[in-house]
Image 1 (tube, rainbow, N blue to C red):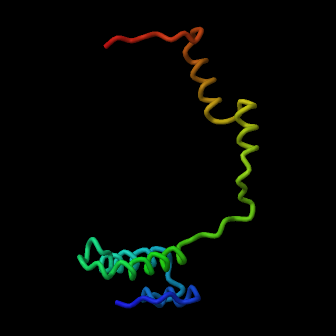
Image 2 (cartoon, rainbow, N blue to C red; image 1 turned 90 degrees about the vertical axis):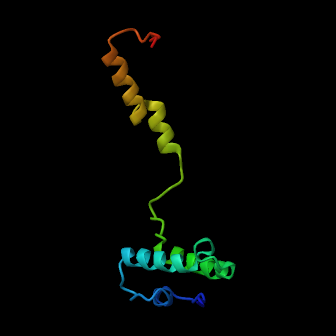
Image 3 (cartoon, rainbow, N blue to C red; image 1 turned 30 degrees about the vertical axis):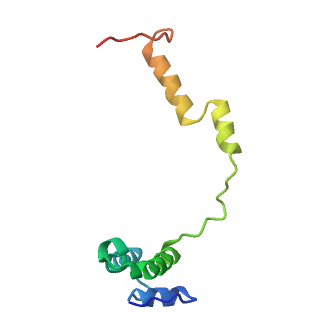
Length: 111
């Protein structure tokens, strides 16, 4: 089976035998069927490796989600929450220390 990479997403849909308005579930299903036929480990034919690589590129191009513009890799908000004690882990530790009702000493429990 020959799979060539095209320049547009619409062509990618057509290569999978789908309509460009197909939902994500249809893309995933078509890819799984194609992968079953092309995967070298399943098909037993090592010459299908290149076609499988192309199918992977097509699939990734169709399912990738654009990164939202408000998304930031800046860690400072997380660091500020952790330092101020308002992050969930700090809150959990605080609640657990209050629920223990003791001074926080550790006790070994022997089985």
